[in-house]
Length: 171
Image 1 (cartoon, helix red, strand yellow):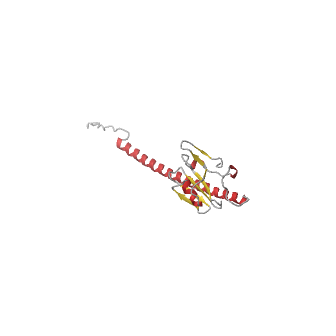
Image 2 (tube, one colour; image 1 turned 120 degrees about the vertical axis):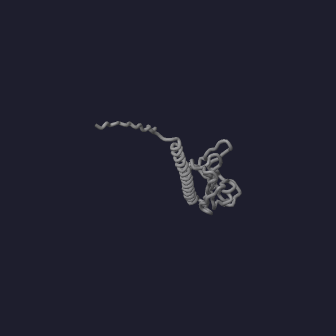
Image 3 (tube, rainbow, N blue to C red; image 1 turned 60 degrees about the vertical axis):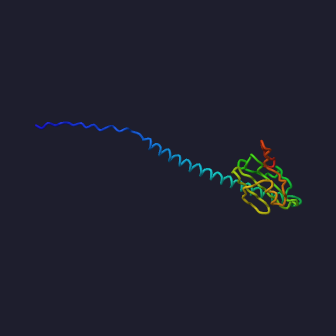
């Protein structure tokens, strides 16, 4: 008779889980995806602010033209008032400095508006002379020369060095 022998071979038990190298690879991949997402989000946010500012400026131009047409003398207003219903998306503009500059020519036949955005160095000019223009240097001294004045703008947001506030004509 044949004797059967049972041979039990023991297979070493393998540990379940991930190695440190595998975990590090996953963490690096997640970090790369997060970095790409953040960069894309910031770019989208900057483009949205630029579009909002351009829309605000186009609306300003329309309102100021209506004010000019309604004026008895047919000229642009020397100063802006809250009754003109000029609106701006305040979260788009820098509030640690003066940020809206309205200048009118001496004869009041031309106007210029400059705005400084929260995007570092970004801004725009809107004028009856040149229309909409992008700029990296929006200030009183760069807005008023568009209409032939050295300075003297009416500011929509006034910054005094420690705090700032919006003028009553910006709704």
